[in-house]
Image 1 (cartoon, one colour):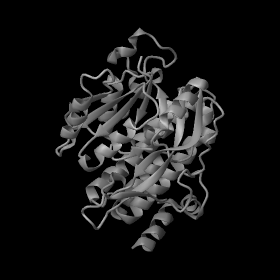
Image 2 (cartoon, rainbow, N blue to C red):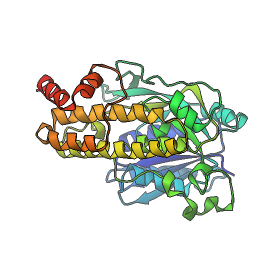
Image 3 (cartoon, rainbow, N blue to C red):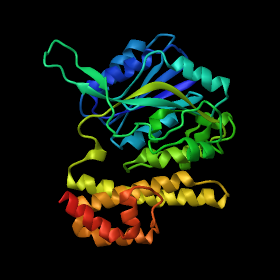
Image 4 (cartoon, rainbow, N blue to C red):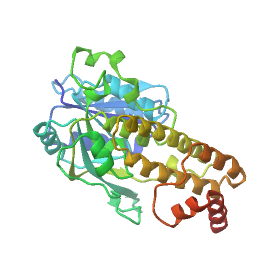
Length: 353
């Protein structure tokens, strides 16, 4: 049986795709497959995928598969990859990012040694430094886009714990799906046993798939996945290189995209409240959700004050209906918001105006 399936959703990333795939091929471990899901690209991405398929076709080690589908977004491409995966474990890789070489063997050794459902590894941010000389290949350099640690209070202990405890005591605000190796059973049926239905896509548990059509799908999906896990641990090995480039949806300058970002943040607040309530009804700790809801509310108020000030009353009313105040966060912004959300919007509008 294949031990690990890399799932790579692809959309118009031809300049970055070879580096991504080559990094997955440069590992010190053999028992894995790479599923390249082309989500309706209009550039040369599909041609590049076919090059890799041709390269491995007919070999005993036929580890690369390609899937072409109409554009449905990142979540849809990941879900397609999940349904097609044959590995006992899954790992998501965004197609403009890349892995460090020769790290997979150590990760899988830890997974098997500790019989893990989930293993989290470290990542670092990189950016592309364009060369002025056409003959010289562009280079990637590591950098920190945040004033604080990029791991934001994460605990990377190798000690094994359950998923709920991991979420509340070791998870920071960065919860990218690409930071994990995940046992595939958890996304099927009751998540507790490996049975013959694993290879039947109809047995996929919809509650464990990525929500399609939204931004911030990782923040929505990651806690839903973790709370199902019984054995979770981390490693402080830096494995993943996360490319920060122009055109990110979460940094969109287009007003319509910013509106979509704002609406999806509002939707995310409601979803996190629902998930927190489920844990509360089970008598389980849900403090991570309180922190994340607070951070999201602060972000929403910042967007309202800078871009949608004329609609501030409508959004503030919706936040009040969600009963998000007072927010469970420290800092001057949180104190101001808890004193008066309306005054916070006014003052932030003046500051950015």
